[in-house]
Length: 441
Ligand SMILES: Cc1cc2nc3c(=O)[nH]c(=O)nc-3n(C[C@H](O)[C@H](O)[C@H](O)COP(=O)(O)O)c2cc1C
Ligand code: SF4
Image 1 (cartoon, helix red, strand yellow):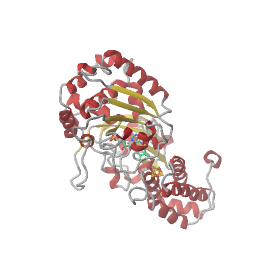
Image 2 (cartoon, rainbow, N blue to C red):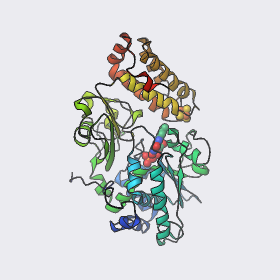
Image 3 (cartoon, protein in one colour):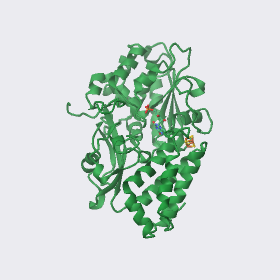
Image 4 (cartoon, rainbow, N blue to C red):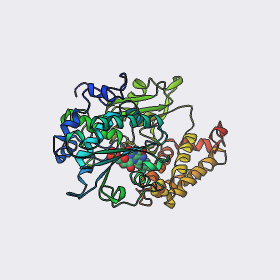
């Protein structure tokens, strides 16, 4: 593998990195110029052959998703840019938007050309005030420079990008919840099929892509599919469903480490390298007890699983739901897993949209059971009860509309499976949380 050269974060420390002028001076918008000279089908084929998989959590192949759009559709087709970024611990999209917004806007314009969309909606997490201001300025710069608007890039066609502030809930990031929210409704996910590529925003064919995914598109067009495939990891021959983990990836590291941050690395870096080398180790000289590989909905790696490669395939081999958002959260060995799991459950219970009974009730009851354990009234059979509730909710058991429920159940299954003796000791000794006030509702 050639020596790794960061591209997604290459510009973020430069002066005025968000300005169109500096972006252009660094070769910005040349990839878009190249793309509009190609046919939409050829751009889609390029992205497909690069093996890019979505960075929003599910890892679906991007070019393949674009081919699901109906052929010769009279229009309109829409692109929704998912910038809701609400998975706890995740902040890679924010860094890209605040420090290099034109990299994203270039990826959006290329994607719109590839899918023949005249309009993109950039759905931005409400709390991201700085991203909003930076993006608003960058979009205005694009209109003034003819990169967006009438006759964009001299193509004779119109292209618009609308910046939309989100409704302030985790469920707004689920792609059909996002679409409902954009339509002005409560972000209740839709039953699929139909998938958005067939019937999405305003019931028209729609592609939903993550911010980092679209930034990768810019570099695939600029540097080619072979370059993208030269970074990362080829498919696991033992897993026929693995499509490989190609390209650079942003990993965020947070929690009990000395230097939390956002790092660009080739796909497949191990959790140990991320923590020890890039985040400068676990804080206060302690050891890691558990590590969330990619947002809390993915579950946990235990201390003896830190050499797991964080690609699309690795965390699943260790019983996690997947790579998710590649947001690593480190839990040190002085922290109670009962408290950690209680916090996870409380988040999902608060964020469940409530449409599906197993999710609405399951997230609530898991929180209540853990609350009972934390206040010293737990029973050993509560652990199996938690597993039973967790096993009954989600798309995987087929009882809910969206994946929030799977993400709520996974940390419970995982934590009890990997840390059961700690939970049992907590219950047997009638221990209570060290700081009940800090965690109180
Ligand atoms: C509860 C929930 C929340 C989600 N939040 C986000 C999010 O904030 N950002 C994101 O890109 N994808 C999120 N997703 C995944 C999206 O539904 C969708 O798969 C993704 O935006 C597709 O983009 P990609 O193919 O480029 O990854 C979420 C999924 C679920 C189930
Ligand atoms: S699984 Fe949960 S969040 Fe998703 S639609 Fe059902 S109730 Fe809402």
